[in-house]
Length: 110
Length: 116
Image (cartoon, rainbow over all chains, first blue to last red; front, top):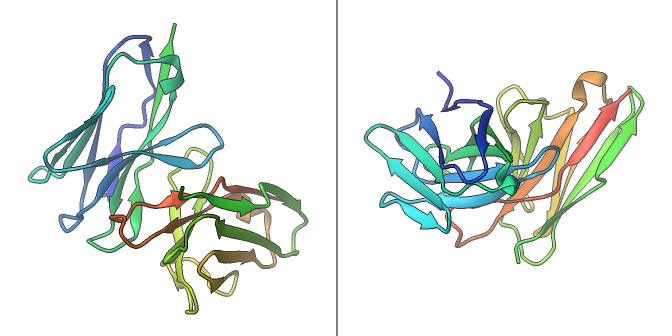
């Protein structure tokens, strides 16, 4: 089983749609969780950290379910500029190493 | 703040030669620097972790004699791909974290290596 699993997509959605991505992780000792965004041929950029209580940043909402070892990202009112690959990232068993999922590709269309 | 640079952005080299990639934290001192490799349509794979002044810790399956890492200061780490082969062609990305950030890492723009 992969340490971090994501549906690779692509998810093709119209502008203005709401879209949700899910991610599962295998190491129950993981303590830090993130969503990164990666544009084609670029480096990953931190989108948001994910906290147990859930957190929101503008159109983006992240949720963590430790019991199910599941993380989600919700994007409301999708923009064309949201088109990218979204990487679910988990720290490795409590240390400072990060494990990346393969990413979910989002394409927002007119 | 928290800007990480990498140099070069891209490099094409011949098989058998060595290539050095630099990673710098521009506006902060990096406690730890990380080197990743990403093949097309695949995830970032951690290659090694380095701390200033000490030997790098390599992930399983990564040859330490092939991928030489030097972390001479709190703002500079280098990765040298020795005797490069076409299968080493990849996107190499470094990152750095700082004390106080809960394992958040700041990424450099990456170096695209093509070995012919």
